[in-house]
Length: 485
Ligand SMILES: Nc1ncnc2c1ncn2[C@@H]1O[C@H](COP(=O)(O)OP(=O)(O)OP(=O)(O)O)[C@@H](O)[C@H]1O
Ligand SMILES: [Mg+2]
Image (cartoon, rainbow, N blue to C red):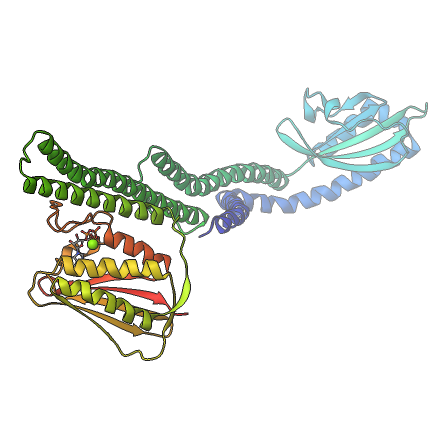
């Protein structure tokens, strides 16, 4: 569930739960007090009579207040009224200006002035008012007020304070209890719901933070625990994606670093070998080991050969580095691949023939097959591959077959030999720089392992793809594609 939804639901719950609970509390209180409520109801009948009795007395007092207001200063009269009123649980209070001049002994000793409404400035005669119930001592009283003026013009008020019967008191107490219960329930539900909702948000956030700290410390191998399907879950998903991306890029970085180290070690090795040989022969000559003309010639020839090897290697390295830095300018043009391969094959046939390997070009393509390519670089690719086929040939009747096929968008050239083949597990590496299946890098076959790496870069620069198919002991095919014009 989404966080938005969860918040919405919790808001709704915060509204509904307190209402239901408060209602429940109310019903509970009423149920518990069911006995006393029934008692009250029976009392109610007698109370009704008393009330009408009260009304009569009040009319009496009103009449006195208009006709003979000073009578309301007469203690005798007041005491008599008080006696009548006490039957219906009502007390009488008379106030002259601000001073209470008579208070029923119903409120024995209570400072009644405090509970009475304030004196009005311009009070009208015969003004009647019923005030909110007020607790005096333990009893709740309904206060009825009547204003008048004494003969001498001073303002006076009569108050009848009727003790509200048990039902009234009960209702009043119930209301107060319910309000307190409602407030408490709201605080309680709010607290619980806030805790539940925030826990479901804060907990996954905390574990995300932990994961971020792991990444900061360079540990990318942990697995992020599963998260709820909400906004935080989405964030965690993005986070996991970032972790994987970081991990691959770090691994790639390490791989690059290793490649670079290997490259330097291979270059040093391949440069060192011919130089050591040259040094050896030069020292031999200086020490006079080459004592005959014939020996001398052999030494010099070897030195020249090694120097040439070195030169070639440096050229190769230079070419590779330019390709790697993408600094080799390509001269792309539209060429007819069919005609081009025909020429190439004719040219190479002679050289391979001298090494005892027969080279043949086959194709079903008859019309010109136009591709975009750099003639010189394409030649280099084909030469590298054919050179390998000759170099790694271990058969008397070696053959090299060049095939050209074409699809709508690409032309594919396949150069197949029937030489020693390449073990299956070494196939993924042969296009790597300096890779030679002969791990000892013994130079009897020569080569530095750059030929196929260079070819691959060139083909890729043409927007093509190069790959190998080989069966050990049967032969090897190198295939590559070029884009048709
Ligand atoms: N036709 C083939 N038959 C058998 N093995 C091959 C063939 N072509 C390539 N290889 C293997 O792949 C390796 C890489 O070839 P690549 O042309 O890159 O290097 P190289 O021939 O050793 O050196 P270079 O081409 O730089 O002189 C070779 O060392 C060889 O072990
Ligand atoms: Mg080679």
